[in-house]
Length: 345
Image (cartoon, rainbow, N blue to C red):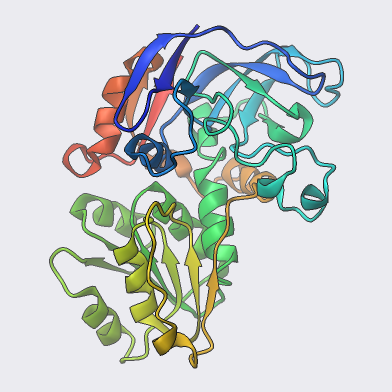
């Protein structure tokens, strides 16, 4: 089969790899129908996650059809149409029993990271019973690709960890796909205002159409002064960091109001400064999280009911064998006006 293979920072190729096979009785092999590229994949390509091995097939999102199942798989059968979760869960270990699937003792985020991933014609899914979700008949596949990662990530790591409440003023730093996923799902809790901050004018314009009440281009304006002006000098109740660089985490610390929550989503490849000399007395809660995907069933219902429309995040379509071109497009998001790309096998 063909797959996108990582060969060290800045090096990738579309090449022939062995088709995956059942290794354990709990495995399934899935034929990829549609997949996408995540900001985390760009972090891998930059070398921010040096533990990713040379030769790894990248990717952790997608929908497909089950090609083969292990003898212990009971919830699925060959031919089933499924969403692939970005997080693998055994469902039995101490962490899984707490709902912390991201820390599963035999799983967690391993696809496209510690084991071969979904940017390929086929993928092996460990613990298939707990790591796949059935696709209801008549569903829009492209919309459901967004349920593999970005929607649960924005919701769990940003909105739930940030404890967004009715009437809150929320700032989301980063208007990429994850930031917009947080924007979409924050609206479940009717905050008074949602302020989107980015340096990409197109992404900010898109955020406005998705429900942002204010947008700030931090390349043109002083974001801290703008936030203080919008909040009568108080700051925001919730600051969601959705980029993963030191400057954006610093910004969250500058704009948070006393008693507020800073919810980190971004994948950080460099150290950041925690300003405890300013925050120690401000009753600030800072949270970190790797998505657990425990909310995927809930989010699937909201998508099916058309309460949110994640398909609107998709800006570009490619065939799977055009993945190098797709990476170029996604990696130059401002120039290409890209949010999410869909790759079809």
